Image 1 (cartoon, helix red, strand yellow):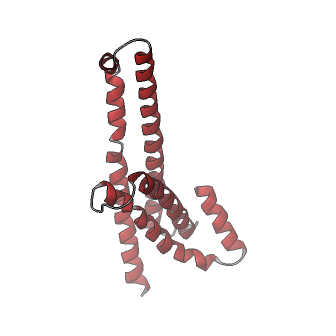
Image 2 (cartoon, one colour; image 1 turned 45 degrees about the vertical axis):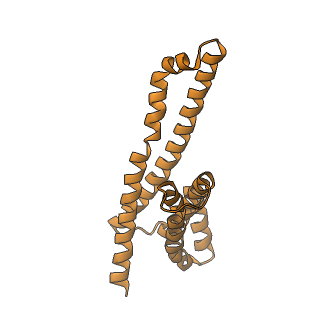
Image 3 (cartoon, rainbow, N blue to C red; image 1 turned 180 degrees about the horizontal axis):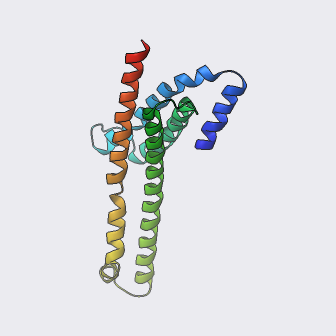
Length: 171
């Protein structure tokens, strides 16, 4: 993601199109906001759309929007707020990716262990009892969102402050 942003920013600088990157912040923010349709569906605020497809679109839109925002930020940091916002953006994306992959891996490991126990002659109930602590780990991994959500919320607050300060001081 960072390498993509650096490449795009380099191309803009190479062809004297640096001013184009200024608008990528707004476009990237709108793209990321559109990715929250998944969250609305998950919380039953809307009823249409496949949760699995919306999750995939959330991941891709967040990734793409983040690249645009990083291009917007470029290496032109001249205040603390942009540094914090970019840092939180990277942490938010990283926490989403780490959570996704750790949850997937812990689910797969649990299911494999459960199937091995059942295949070796244990009953499903007996197998689940033997894997009690593994199931707790999977349940804890499902709660990774409790870390991801506050980071994302703080990123949203910093983004809003950034937008307000730009409007206040540039008009």
